[in-house]
Image (cartoon, rainbow, N blue to C red; front, side):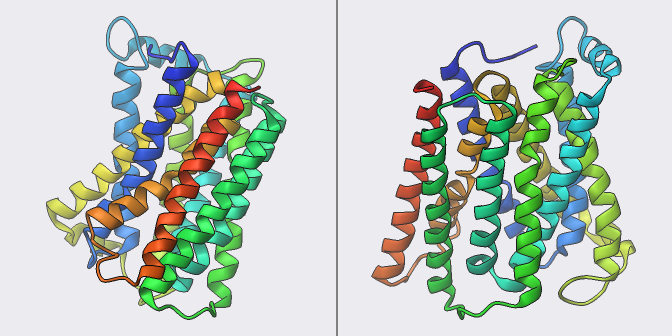
Amino acid sequence: MFLPQDPQTALLLIVVSMFCWGSWPNLLKALPEWRLEYFYIDYTLGFLAAILLVAATAGSTGVVGTEFLGRLLDAHGPEAAFAFAAGFIWNAGNILLLNSIMIAGLAVAFPIASVLAIVLGVGFSWWTQPIGNPAWLAAGSIILVLAGFANARAYRALAGAPGASKSLGVGLALAAGLLVGIFPPFIARAISGAHALDPYSVSTYFMVGASIATFIGMPLLVTRPFIGDAGRMSGYFQGGTFRHAMGMLAGAVWCVGTVANFASAGLVGVAISWGIGSGAPMVGALWGIFLWKEFRGATRGTVAMISASLALYTAGVVLVALAYELR
């Protein structure tokens, strides 16, 4: 079973997780005519398949998969329940966040949700698993929140979006931030309890919990969407191989990042792994700049704002990393 043996390796894995978390939305963006709900089903199938492959290889020793399966079946007590609940809570929040962005726009939804998610996630995780210097963690979290606001403001200026937001979008963003912010302490509890689980078992239970949220939520959202026209679940089967493959690949990319993050959390703490992982929007912004050319023709003020956002994200991630070194 592969686990980081030193803080440097753990921090490197967290950076990998940040890259994965900030990269998978590219595959959604490449399918502009495909319903989010259909994409999300494939995304879920992708991360379920990926966790089985990762756990059977990197998460196992001896005959491929058998040793991990034994550990998974032996898992018991509240730790397994905490990991399962964390996945369900995170995915419920992520689904609400995506819908909030569709309704109110990135410039409104993202800063509302990110403030709650970062502050609650880092704060409660440190309280549950006090690893790292709290002052540096707090400083890094504040910088990351400011980076989120700068990022959203740049996209608002780019799109010419009005300052006013729809109340439903704001409400969904608040709910999303709350849910995404409270799941990390559940992971901290799962990897540090009396019957602490290894990261691969935690990830597996987490993915299963997340999938339940998908398979409950997506049929409801297809027939009763927050925005747009209602559809039918049968439309999912009309997507074609390419669309389904893109969704599954997105889920696999996200899964690799999540496992890397959880594997590091046992050594450096969930507060630090989640805090650095919260720099994922910086990766997304870089994709937007260099792959999608979103800022081509933007005003100098908009370019300056997105540049400030990237600088703040970098500073915030560095401060959170230093919280471990200066603990």
